[in-house]
Image (cartoon, rainbow, N blue to C red; front, side, top):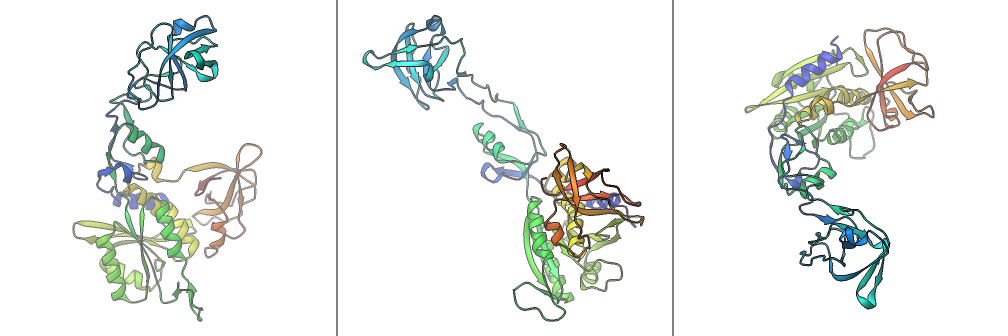
Length: 408
């Protein structure tokens, strides 16, 4: 059997990062930066007020209460054509530029307006600089905003826009073809006949691919016909960056998928030292000058899910530009609520568990009773895979590692 880490490295070494290109700001969300981004402008671009209030000279309000003459008003976006002379104040709104002569802002709550004499009573003293945002106090021109390898989120878009970054170099989302094969599969809601089953793997994998930050492309169900499958696989290789199939990869399978992939792709058929998802296939289809990765996942729904999470997902995220730190899901240290019974078989087991924060402040896991490779319902009700090393099991209260695929 192939150790899991060896299989991972084999896959990752053949899944190259997609070529980057300039991407417009509005299209950057969710993409991974290929180069560091520096600020072309400072933020704020000018001194402005952080509060609504009055622009004053701090020396005029050293001994409150102080009565000042109001000589004008400034709003956000207005040009500062008014100066603050000794004994005067300017009504000012948040974001407005600081007028000449002003060195502090008094909050409106600390004043009383005298409408009849165009004046204001300042009830508190303020130090120089109070209420004023300095130019570049958030970001200075030339600052490195974000490093290469970072996935762009909504807050980052706001930062880029504030600095007038209109585009950045980023890796594209991998286009990933997802298909199911088999005459027994039904996905149109029609009644099942003997020997038929509802299609589920493709439906699940399309969403898993999208959740990995890729563009999922649905190639539907391909019937058990070698010519038809070859046509679909070659078309997918021409238009997509990777292909994901499920089923037909087990030892002894005489399956159309194995026949066709063995003929048109450079495949490696593996038996990985883990349970579930022992059978796994990986290879490449040549399409022009490109070598398109093919992930052959096992047909049992749980095995397909686990195989995708541990092998396909990190490889696809690597293609999207993620470094190893974010290509892989994080492992967490957890406390077992249950005994885990197993026999030594040379494999690492990945049990489906529900991780939650216990009142003791630590992350605990509760094991699902349904662990068979066809029992997909347990995956929908759990949020982590518990790594159970080869051996004779673990005891409640033991510390272990779990891979979280949903937040605890």
